[in-house]
Each structure stands twice: as structure tokens, then as C-alpha cells.
Amino acid sequence: MPDSHRPRRIEDLPRLAGATVAVRAWVTTTRFSGKIAFVMLRDGTGYVQVVVSKKDVPDAAWQACGTLTQETSVEVVGAVRADPRAPGGGGVELQASELRILGPSHDFPITPKEHGTAFLFEHRHLWLRSRRQVAIARVRHEVIQAIRDFFYERNFVLVDTPILTGSIGEHAGTLFSTEYFDLGKAYLAQTGQLYVEAAAAALGKVYCFGPTFRAEKSKTRRHLTEFWMVEPEVAWNDSDANMTLQEEFVASIVARCLERRKAELAELERDTAPLERVTPPFPRVSYTEAVERLEGLGAEMAWGRDLGGDEETLLAKQFDRPVMVYNYPRGVKAFYMKENQADPRTVLNNDMLAPEGYGEIIGGSQREDDYDRLLARIREEGLPEEAYAWYLDLRKYGTFVHAGFGLGVERTVAWICGIPHIREAIAFPRTLYKLWP
RNA sequence: UGGGGUGUAGGUCAACUGGCAGACCGCCCGGCUGUUAACCGGGAAGUUGGUGGUUCGAAUCCACCCGCCCCAGCCA
Image (cartoon, rainbow, N blue to C red; front, side, top):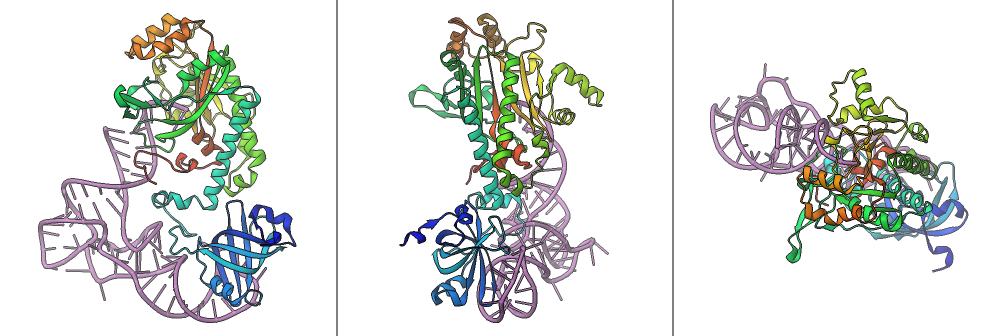
């Protein structure tokens, strides 16, 4: 095969105008007009229209062209030509000189018209090929790369925490379990936080990033049973420094997507104006202030109760960028959060609420670093003391002020993309009723 | 774990008070040398989620079962 016929990616075609190239790709749509055919191709890197004129191609190629259906895979050889009539991006199209079917495709289930979400998720493995899903996947990829770059540039060390574990993060009722040889039950991790605290004493600034599992029977647009979470943990950071890290972190992720995924956000018809405003500092509201504000807005509040979804949305609507709510009542938060010396009814934690009704994307806190107080909290919650022996050790051998948080990747992607349901933010979502494909 | 919905052609949906199973899109065949959700002509396509019941007659009414969706709670 001559060099000019080396297969090219569609994304490279705009700068190859005038050249003759080969492209391997999938057919999305075809239109015929007698002796001329228009075939739209996609290869994951972009879209290009192929123009096939009967007089310009061998008979076999013209006949093959007549049998093209949605998602047929083909190899096309043709001249790259700039043409104002070319649809899609790039401004170029291919004038075919040869066309060959590589893999036929009959009755592709997902047609260019309307479908319900149930049907689409039954065919998730094929739905991934659609323009919209490709755009979401690329934004997700950018979010993840932005996360890794943010921590790399700040000299954080990535520490991978175990997915199978014998100890327990928060509430035993929400864990998936499996048999683990002769050692009894193992649990799928629902957080890497406890481990990353140990690593912070070794490395100073660390984070873990992996899948996490919650056996909650949640059925909302904001929940998955398996999702990805990034959890930084920093030695010597207090709750205040923790919040500053969070706002810089989230702002950098959003800025990165705006800078490098404009085309994808446009494909998703995302209004980017609200995203442009996501710059530090973010508003910070104490839980107690939040309760007062919500009462002023007509909500029925009682100090000591957690904020519900509606209340979070109502509160988030008061601001034009993510808002951080800090120092919640002790009773509604986890045992490892540090008691607030200034008001012992509360703990030194915070949530970050995304704008536009997307809700909680971050939960974080300063950790209890006092051995006796942590032990008392473990007992108070009725947790198995022996399972937390190693965790208590961290307070026994040179205890240290430290804080960290967890950011939900799918919630963040859903917010940045402006998609209504979190399950589109991951290739193969796992929910209460969806274990396949 | 509660509350509310929904299930009819491959898809999205219609079908009056219980009275012949329909439309559009897609698909298949034919036509058209610049289509952009193309257009024009023709065609195929159904155990109305399942089981039982009421009735002369059930997509429609009743009971049970199954699948799915939305909301709340839990949280990222």
C-alpha cells in the first residue's frame, strides 16, 4: 500500500486537504440521489462525509455503496477536499475513488430518531457510539486527566487503596460483601479515606482515585452503586485549608474542560456561561447560617437535621458558583470527623454543592486526631473496635492535624456536561436494576 | 425501604363509554448527480409484558405476577 493510502484518522483530514488518503470507519447515515451517494462516516476521532459518484468508482464499489447501512464498517480511499457544503466539523469531505465493506451491519437498533432511556441502556454497548455519548466520554476523560494533572503539579503522591477490605468505612449496611478464602467476609471499598490517612503520614500529600461501591438501594438521578471517587488527604491541613484546596481543585477541572472540550460541550448544547463563573473564592456558609437562610426562604428547618436534596438545591440557587456548607451537627456526620472546639455540637467538615441543582459533589472534613476522642466516637457508634485498631494507631504514633475530601467523578461530569442523569456520565453504569451490559 | 407512574410493530406513541390493531420514524424494494432530520412511489412488520377471571365480545374492567421509569431517604 502506498504511503498516501496509509489509513488516516478523521481528525487528521482537515490538514490533509488535497491528498488522497484511506480511512477506516463506521457508517452513520447514507443519502442517495441517483448516481451520487453521500455517506457519513465516524471513527471516534470525528465525522466526515464521503461523496461517491458512480462514474468515479469501480462497479463493485458502487454496488457495495448501495448496500451500506448504519454502523457498517468500511474502508474508503479518496481525495480530501475542502468544500463549504461539507456537513459537520472540519470543512472537508472525501471524494471516493474506492470503497470496500469490512463488516456489514443489519438492523442496528439505535436509529437516528427518538428512543426511551430504558431501551438505550439495554443497548448501552451500542449507544456509546452516538455523538452525544462520545462527547460525554471525552469530557469525562478530560475531567480525569485534569484531576491527575492538578495533583501531579502540586506534588501529591497517588496511593492506590484496596478495593477488597476487611475493615469498614462508615455504615456496615451499605457494603457489598463476598467470601474471602478462610478469612470470612471481605467488603468492596466504599471509600479509600482511612487508608489514605495512613499514607498521608508517610507521604504528606496524597490522593487515591478508584472505583467505589455502595450497596445503598438508591434510585435517584444522583446515585450509582459503583462510581469513581478521587480522595485527597493532606497532613497539616485544617478544615479551612481543606476548603481552599477544594475550590482551587474544582475551578481547575472546570477551566480545563472549558479550554479543551469546547467542541464536546457545544455538541451537548451546554450553556457554558455558568461554568465560566466557577472561579475561586467560592461562597462558604456554615450549617447554622444555612439553616437560617433556608428558614428565611420559607423552608421548614430544624437545627440538627441534615440538609435534604430540595434544601441543597434551594441553597445552591442563592449563589452563582459552587457553595461550601461547613460545620454540620455532629449527629448527622461520620465518626472520624473532628469535633469543633468552638462549638462541640458541630464537626469540622464541609460539603460542596454544585450549582444548577446538581447537588453534592464533594464531602470532606478535618479528621479527628485525638486518640481518646476518636475511640469514644467509635464506641458511641457501636463500631467494632478491633477493626479500627490500625486506624487508631495513626493517632497513637505522632498524631497530626489532617484533612481531606472525596469528589464524585460522575456527578462532576454530569454537572459540567449539563446532563440530567448521572448514569450517562459513565460508560457502563451500575444501578439497583442494571448489572448488564 | 416508602410514594407515584408505565408496559400496544424494531423505536416513539395513538386507539371515545368494552365493539374491525393505527400513525410517524426506522427497515426492505424502486426512482432521482449536492444530500444536511433529504425527497417521491411501493412493501413487510403485532401472542397489545405474563397468567387467570368478568363478558356475546377485553389493548381497554378485576386479581396476581414480571419488567421498567420518576420522586423521597442514604450519600459522592
